[in-house]
Amino acid sequence: MTITRSEELTITTKELLMCLHKMAEVLEANREYLTSLDAAIGDADHGINMDRGFKAVLAKLPSVEDKDAGTILKTVGVALVSTVGGAGGPLYGTAFMQAGMAVAGKYELEPQDVLAALDAALKGVVMRGKADLGDKTMVDALTPAVNALRRALENGSGLTEALEQAAAAAEQGMKDTIPMLAKKGRASYLGERSIGHQDPGATSSYLLIRVMADVARELQTQQEP
Amino acid sequence: MKKLINHPANVVKEELEGIALAYPGLVKVHFEPNFIYRADAPIPGKVAVISGGGSGHEPMHGGFVGVGMLDAACPGEVFTSPTPDQMLEAAKMVHGGAGVLYIVKNYTGDVMNFEMAADMARAEGIRVLNILIDDDVAVKDSLYTAGRRGTGTTVLAEKICGAAAERGYDLKRVADLCRRVNINGRSMGMALTPCTVPMAGKPTFELAEDEMEVGIGIHGEPGRERMKLKTADEITEMLALAIIEDPPYRRTVREWDEEKAEWVEVELEDPPFRPGDPVLAFVNSMGGTPDIELPIVYRKLHEICTKKGLKIVRNLIGRYITSLEMQGVSITLLRMDDEMIDLWDAPVKTPGLRWGM
Image (spheres, rainbow over the protein chains, first blue to last red):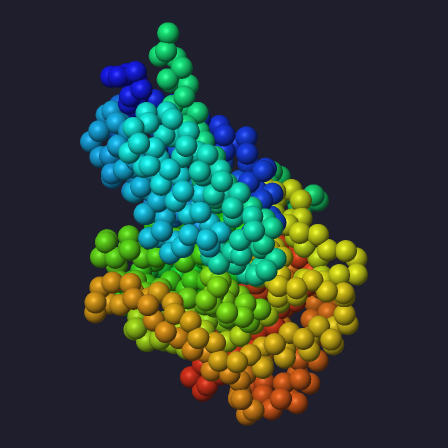
């Protein structure tokens, strides 16, 4: 990591890899939690699938650890598409592949690159899943997160603070799915009965953005005297 | 959880190993990526019919691979859509130069994975069309949901389209036929008990001793409505009338347009049943309901169809599209025409469905 000014954090590929490892850890720790959320309104496999997918990601990472961030993220996406299955596979797979394309060739990510990657990830999810805001999906956590990140950076916040705001917005977006009526995915078949349950996809999206914020804060703390 | 397994993570793999050993002349199994395919594939000049979906619905889809039905089936994890690499490799293995039809049940994950697979296969020069099956009348609207789920009609479409491909129909004709089977088929199911996904270890929902779940899909997901347990006749009547009295169902689905070379939204409408319609009546066990109970359902279904003026010209009764060990039943009615009847009667030889050869 390099601190060019006191608040300007950039992310190296080594730190990106660390972040991906941490994502795998968090998904493993939340396997039962995500699966139980999915059991309430879906088919009880989201935690299992995400854990399996990120374990496959970990197995692939050594082969690209000296590559650029774009290649790393695209590799993550391909691994997820071919192992997660369900709707999560194409959606998260597309998200990571699109994020990878947004930062192709870069070995160090500036705050604007992180925003570009997350924005591309969100657009990929919307394109693949055709979900709108308020349909009770991943989009309900990712959209406010990307908006918060953009706003914070525009207002001059550093990456750590901006990601913290993104994670807070994702958490709120995740909680906001509780009263929503599901209109996409398997939960939509429950009709009114989907109301009152938190969306598992929005939850896993929040968890991943939370990891990004935590990793950034950890890096910042390490660098401060 | 009590199951005849060795380890929850190995269920699908060990099932496939067993299938490979059990039907060596009929099917072969490819591992990593996983798919079951016809032992005599590829068959030059024949359209390859491929399906797939989460495991846990056996014998569908793997049990329907063989002569006169599927060329390949891609099993995902239990109740989880398979992945595009499986569908792509299966297509490359079995296509005989006349194109590939992917028969896809309408679930968000399956649809997205099969669309990605079709794009990838086309990039490798293989002609592919995807046709969706969305026949579950328990889902009323398509505006506020992901649309009707693919259930019992899938089995019938795989049989009829498999026979058509065997006869030498070209890709467009097999795809058109598949769409026609889909819009003429309607299903609805119910559960007496939930089921347990091996990796989850506990039932996907809970039902009291005197309760049942009506309008379920096939993934152990809760249904549309929970109610007090009723008799077989009452349950059959509830399902049958929901199917027979279902109004025209309109929705848009995404299909590949070969001329424009892009995905397009296609409007489809299922015509309602009318007195005089010849139908295939399909009574299916969700897995745990024993054979002794299915004729009880069929008996009442026959009575209702007769009363409504529907003429049952063919039937299928048994365990064909299941949700693991769930007790329950689904009913499918498919409006038949002469061509469909002829293809239904054509010889078929698969582990799960066999007649005429």
